[in-house]
Image 1 (cartoon, rainbow, N blue to C red):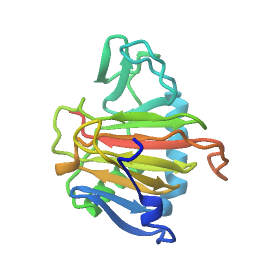
Image 2: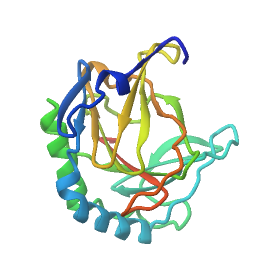
Image 3: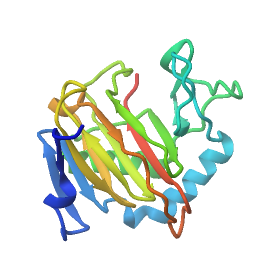
Length: 221
């Protein structure tokens, strides 16, 4: 993406750790929005991942993703040689995904409203765990049945660089610094923007250790 990437590290150098930064119409970075719910979120996360442990999915092409994933909610996002999809059961156990904790759904609803997308009711939360070096290539979230609902993405643990692109994979991207407690919301005209995560740098978070955890809320059905 060299030559086509705007750097928000420079744009917001020395900026506030609170408040809202608009990335593009329909998309906002809510600085530190989840920090006041940190303890309850992490406790709920531990309960979900104990019931449905992280695992690394395969892509339809047979590639093993570097990011480990799990889900909670009425449906979860999965990937294997048969394709990308949502389903109600965990392929590893055959059981239903854990229910979405109210701490999760309340945060997603409130963050969406703060970014101008009132009435969001997520039915799926994809939980991504990034060890140092893990990344997510540019992609669109388009496996959902209805694109009218936004995506709400909560960052916990190690910092990361969020790449927020355009309507095509080749579009110019923003490099958005994300830290523990930051929330990104994108919907409306920004709902199908390409986005990804640059390789996570080595480090250690005082609560979550050497990992970044991302809670991604969607309305899948």
